[in-house]
Structure formats: structure tokens, C-alpha cells
Image (cartoon, rainbow over all chains, first blue to last red; front, side, top):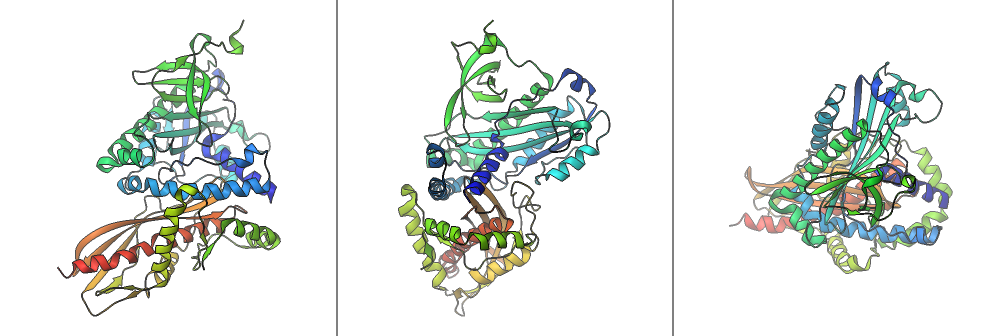
Length: 302
Length: 209
């Protein structure tokens, strides 16, 4: 039972787009060989997930069944409470379709790089099982690739901000050559973090929900556009580290807590910046101007 | 007493682990089945505890005591207006695409609405429910189900008003089995649908003006 709970917890973390894994850079050779792309743009969620401050007693105590049960019980209460707080936003935005927003932006980015086969106006709803994914990859011909994205969107920080996160993979036919899971020729995590709105909880929800969710829709739309642009950038650029632009940026951990990462400034825009986590290569679009870091990345000390 | 301490439920489930495992393996999960007796849970989070206790008590009263109204009340069948009609989520290895949703909704209506309203020979109030969202997801060690619906209240074929309702149902993710996700949806229906009954007297009162 303990193992089962632990495993489920791990699976949940991995598939919620919070997987910890190094970026797999699209090599120059692979980039040159891509002629057309099949896109599987997945959004499992039907609506935004409320902000829940996930209890992690089990983590703090080094695991165990009782701490896991305590976490489960606490988190259930917190989820119920978060749903209640967010109810006005849900009611104001029940016709909002994030799948359409994201499909429009990702289609635009992908078609600017490759020939996109079978373009869809709305993102997919069905998670592909491993056998279905492998079958899709095996159907590819030479020069054809599968771009698989899976996206999530959540209220964060007591509902003050919104995070859109995408995990992206590119596969080619030979990705399934060996047994086991297909090996992508590209992988990365891309995230958009909105600016903070309101004082948290009901106050922020009221701001998001005002005028039929006007601000919520705008930020969600901006998030979709930013994710698509960052994806395009990442597919085109193989440079991992730029030593002269180290900054510190705030991102969210899997339990919703904010923490600071050392990162490389990719682009400073008027109101936000794109940074690359120097540890794993993930890209984040964060609000404001990140603070320059005094430290040099180890890989830059030469 | 329907409220059961969550930890007791979890510990009890441990004591019958082999049976649970067998059940989880045995069930073919392609059909969604409505659960009549949803397990009520006690909220542990202190901040939400008092509020939830009051809400649970009110809901309990709604479920046990028929709603008395001076109207005749008719419930129409659910219209499915979900943006996503293909899935209700995923259990992380595959999409959850249950069949039998119409039957599930009809069973829920029969259990939670019809027969719960004592009516008189007044005007006929027609309720047209629309299913806006129905999905389930895992969070931490729990599975949650969400049901969101809107209800048109009609008198003599004219729309009086539309009201919206939501419910969240939760259960422990013991086996990550499909039926546990569907149970969460049944619990969500038990949270959302009784709220409609509470509104009937106030809407019915408007028909007299």
C-alpha cells in the first residue's frame, strides 16, 4: 500500500508537467531533417485548476504511510476550500475554451517552422496511451516527425497568478527503434507565469472573474501565445548556456511554493522576461525584470 | 450518520486491502456507474472546517427532507453542453472515456431530484438542467470529481431565470482504478445537485408575483 501510494504520487507529479528532467536539445542534424510535423497538442484539463497549497508532511518526514494519509486528508480539505473560493471565476468563465486558445497559438508557431499536417482548431482531450503513442511514431515516414505537447494551467500563489506549463517532445520514426519507451529527439518544459493580481484568494478571484472573466481570458491567452513563442525559440536554438546573462528568477515548485532559480536571460521584454533554468534547461516566461545573479554558472567558470 | 471521518475510511480500506485489490482488477471500467450512497467526508483543514460543517449540515437537511413547494415541479432530462464530450480526464495511463453517461445522469436525477420534492397543485415549474462540466482529476493522494451545471427555471414555457451550481467530490486514490475516478464523479453529483432543490421554493415564490 505504501509503495502504491508512493508510486501514484510520483506518476501524478510526472504527468502534471512537473517532471524533473534535462532538456534534450534538438540537434543540428535532426533540425535539418524535419520536413513535416504531426502535432498532438494535448490539454487534459477542462478548466483551470484552483490554487492549492499542497501539504507534504510525508516528504518532510522522509515518507511513510501515516504521513501520506495525513497529507491526503489535509489536501482534500484544502482542495474543497480552493474550489469554493474559485467558484465565482468558474461561473464567469464556463464558456472559455483554453484548448482553442492554445491550438491557435501553437499552430501558428509550428507552421512558421515546418509543414504542419492535419491542423486542428482545438487541442486534443485524450491522453495517448503508450501503445497509441508508439503506433503514431511508427506510422511516420522519413522526414516526418511527431511534436507531442501536453499543457496544464493552474491558479497559483493563493490565486494571485496563473501558470501555464507545457511539456514538449519531438519524435522521429527511429525513436521507437529500441524496446521500451520511445526516445524523443527533443524534450523540454516550458512555463508561463503571470503577474500577480489582487491580494490573494477571494480578492484575486474577484479580479480574475470581473466582466465575465475579462482579465482571466486575457492572461490565459497571453500565456498560450508566450508558450507557443518559447516553444518555437527552443526548437530553433541549441545553445544551452550563455554565461554573460545569469539572473535569478522566481518560479513555482510542484507543490505550488515559489522558489528562486539561477537562470540565463534569454529575452527581456517590456513587462516580462524569458529565462532558461541553468540546472535543467527548462524555459520560463516570468513577469518583470529578473535580478542579475552575482554567481557564475559552474559551466562558465573557465 | 453519513459523515465518516476520512482517516477512519482510509484505515478501514487498509484493513480490507486484498478485497479492494481484487475488486479493482475485476471491474471493467468502460461504463460509468452512478453511486447512490456517496461517502461524506469530514474536512480536516481548520480554516475550512467550520464553513464546511455548516454547509454539510445544510446539505444533509436538503437530502433527507423533501423540498416543499407550492408549485408542481417537473425535471427535464439533462442537456449535455460540455465543451469536451470525449473524456472525463485521465488515470495517467489512458484517457477516461466512460460510456453510459445518459443513464448515469438519469439515475442521478432519480436519486437526487425526483421524489425529493413535495409539490402542490400550483403552477408548473419546469427545470431544464444543462451539464456544463464533468471531469475528474488526481491531486496529491486524492481523486476529485467536478460537476458543473446550469438550470433553466421555466414557467408556462417562459424562462424565469438560470442558476448555476457546482460540486466537488473527493475520494482517496487507493488503486488509481478507473472506478475510483467515477466514484469521485458520483460524489460530485451528490454535492452539486441537491443545491438545486434548495432553490426551488424561492423560484416558485416568484411565480405568484
